[in-house]
Length: 388
Ligand SMILES: NC(=O)c1ccc[n+]([C@@H]2O[C@H](COP(=O)([O-])OP(=O)(O)OC[C@H]3O[C@@H](n4cnc5c(N)ncnc54)[C@H](O)[C@@H]3O)[C@@H](O)[C@H]2O)c1
Image (cartoon, rainbow, N blue to C red):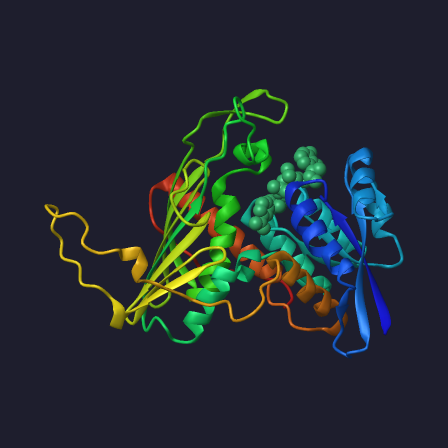
C-alpha cells in the first residue's frame, strides 16, 4: 500500500466543534482506522493535522492526548509547511473570513464550519474569492449525514410520501444561564456583537436540510426572541444577551411544501431526540430525529374523531413503524471529512462548496430581516457574480 499524506492546518481545535467532532471523531478517528482507501485501491489517504490556536498550553495538551506532534500559534507558519494541502477552520464565526483569506493566499484548499461568514456580503465575497481561486472548497453540512435524516432522504427518494405537504421541525433544548449551573454553550452564542444568535447558527443548517432533502426554499418568515435577557459567561460574569435564543420560522418550499421550524435554546425537551422533523405527505408521514425514523402509511392511518369528552382512544405513538438502518452509519462529520479528502486526492465530487455555504448565510440574513420588518421575504437565487 502506498501512503498519501495530506497536511491539514486545523484552526479552532481548542473549541467545542473543532476538538470533539473534527479532530477527535473525524481526523484522529480516520488516522486510527488506518486512513482511507483512495480510488486506485492501492493508496491509503492519511491526514496529518497541524493544530493551530491561540493558547500554547491547550494545543500542547490536545496534541499529547491524540499522539500528535505538530501544533503552532502562528497560522502563516502552519500554512507555509510544505505538506499542507488543506486549511480547516472551526474558529469563532467572526474570525473565519480572515483565516480563509490567508489560506487562499497561500493556495490551500479550504474546508470549514458553517456559517462561512457572519453576513451575506462577506459570505458571497468569500465564495467568489474561493471559487475564482480555483481551489477546492467545502463547508460542513453535517445534518445531512445524520442517520435519521439519511433515512428521511431515503423515504423521499423512494417516493414514500406521495406529494409532500408539510415539514414540521423542533430543534432545541435548555441551555443553562450559567449562574447556578454552567452553560453548555459558549457565551459568544448569546452576543450579537460576537457573531452569536440562533438564527445565524441554525438557519444555515435549515437551508441545506430543506433544499437538499425536500425542495428549494422560496420564502421565509421568522420571529425571533431573546427569551433570557441576561446570562453568565465562562468566567461567571453576568452579561446582557444581545442575540436571540429562539427563532420560530416558516418557510415555503418549491412545490407548495410548507416547513415550520422552531429553533430554541430555551425549551425543555419532551421529544425522543434533540431535533425532530415530522413530514406529512399524501401517501404517508414520517417522524425523524437524529438517529431514528418512524413512518405511518396512509393504509395504516387511524381515523380519530374529535371528542373532548372522552379520554384518548388510541395509542397514537404505537401506530408507527420503525425504518430500519439497513446500513452502518458513521459519525456525520467524519463521513464528510472522508468525502472531502477523496475530493482532494481523487477529485471525487463534493457538492457542499462555499456557494452552498453562502446560501445558508443568505437564509439566516433574510430570516433576521424578516423578523426586524415583521414580514415574509422571498429567497432570491443567490448571485455570486465574478468569473464563473
Ligand atoms: N456544524 C455544527 O453543528 C456546529 C455546531 C456548533 C457550532 N458550529 C460552528 O463552529 C464554530 C465554532 O463553534 P464552537 O461552538 O466550537 O465554539 P467555541 O467557542 O467552543 O470555539 C471557538 C474556537 O475559536 C477560537 N477562537 C479564536 N479566537 C477567539 C476569540 N477571540 N474568542 C473566542 N474564541 C476564539 C477558540 O480558541 C476556539 O478554538 C462556529 O462557527 C459555529 O457556528 C457548528
